[in-house]
Length: 183
Image (tube, rainbow, N blue to C red):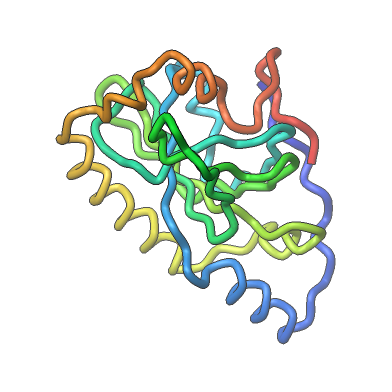
């Protein structure tokens, strides 16, 4: 699996950067999706990597025990909540073509947690190329601490249903051949 080619970062003014960062980090929620993935795939999600998901990115705001060996934890303030949600999945999704940044990966015995930041649309995601903030490191630590607590709980039964598992079985941003989708 190859990394996506990262387009050169456009120059943003200080005021633009401040506005983009504020817009991205304001009112974040945390959403998860579990998938059964090989260690070779999860190892490719290196901190700082920016990639695009071609399709919809399904996730849930309902967090319990792990349903698979990989959990994507997605910080976002622009996921869409699906209503009605008759199956009680806590279904949310990121639009087609959404761009994500890997904030961190926590490997544990038999699995991985991959912490992602859902970046703004348009060309504003380019502001995050090469950008690292101490806030991101704090977010990863808090997320891992929280996930360690939450995964001690039972798996939420609705999130074991075949339809849900099938909708989340693919890695985010990776095609069938194991390559990241182009940005």
